[in-house]
Length: 263
Image (tube, rainbow, N blue to C red; front, side):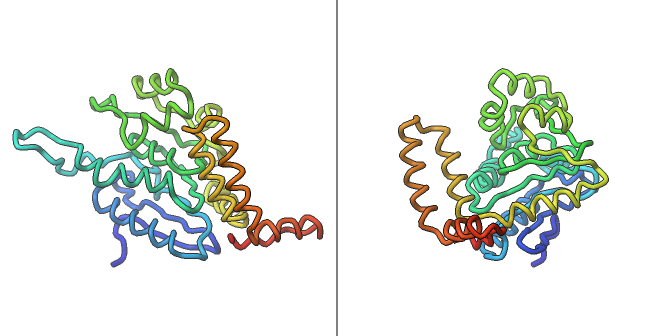
């Protein structure tokens, strides 16, 4: 069945998943989570896809959880948000964090609440100049979820993370770039073109080395230096025996652009 809450298109080696509930500022509901899981599965299985871009339709990346839907209640009638996190958000964040291919969150507009943390779970975040990020949970009496309390302190430090979470202040794209949350900021008028060009350049790179680099960075968060050095040696042995490395060396010697195949 065709997804009803998003679109997935492939251009060359780049797949773009566009959240498409613009009338709700691309707010997440159960159907969108299901569609996104399927789209990520398809992109991962498709050997032609080397980079996945996640973006939004209309004026927002996403406003986070759709609060207009009926929320699950326990036997006493109290709202229980735990099941939705366990079923949808937690697996999504883990999937993005461990995804085999490079992922780019392209913030065409605001990324608010859970969608901010979903974006930060991607490998690279780029943003339109008018976009902003916001840990808006305290405005409705909640704590940050979707990995926010784990990801954000590691990016900006615990004090800065707490300030952003407790104040629920919006962080404009250029300030987010200075803080290390966003890699590049593009002008609104050229955003789609600039994102496509950036993703296409990334897709020309060595897919195997990308995967191994992601693995090394992820494990660095818990390894000591000696363990990390040993991991680098092991992963570099794998990369050094690859066809991509041989192609990279040949291209360097022949003074031409490499043609990587991801193996």
